[in-house]
Length: 238
Ligand code: MLT
Image (cartoon, rainbow, N blue to C red; front, side, top):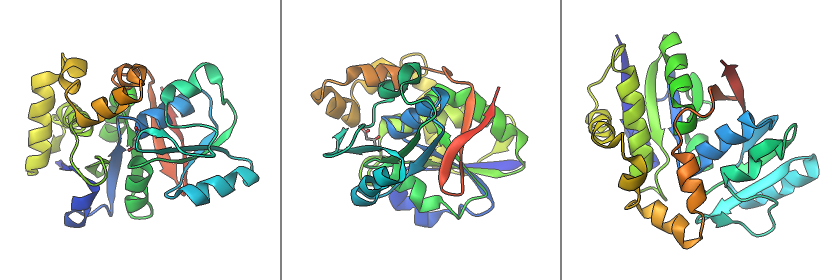
């Protein structure tokens, strides 16, 4: 039986192996939610970049640059990190270079290590679960957290995915069990439960509550997003 584990923050990644596994990176508020939305809304490709300066320089190579730090658009960038910026095909056909506080950092910790790297969001939860069922790979869910710390929203997503995969995956990971129980206790009240989360309050301070509601929408986009080399693209559209 395939195995599933949950790494609750990138700080704990040294305790796990990514090799020969499918790693699902999750940053619900908002990096992976934004990536899934952008690609579903027609963006051709996304280049996740770890630092601001490298990302800024990519505008001279035809990329639209999207940069966020501490929940706000970084200085000198065209876009921040809101999924709403990509709706109605606003950037359809474009290449996006993106750097965020936690999400792109987490991706860079596992790129070139895992067999497959997928972007997890509530927006494409079922499609990602269905795809993982077709792979003969163990799964590691990597929660991006907040600056190395645990956060509720990424852990809830991890629990939702563990719950969906529990019929064909086994786990001996207490992090996976805790995430699953946390999700199953709150699956019908995600928005109200997460109203107490630290990043919800951080985003509310920037008047971006609409992003919160959007990022918690289940299965809006039936797509799988994966990292091919250095580029994020849609792997499988149902
Ligand atoms: C992150 O990468 O930490 C988040 O997406 C931050 C945000 O966009 O609010």
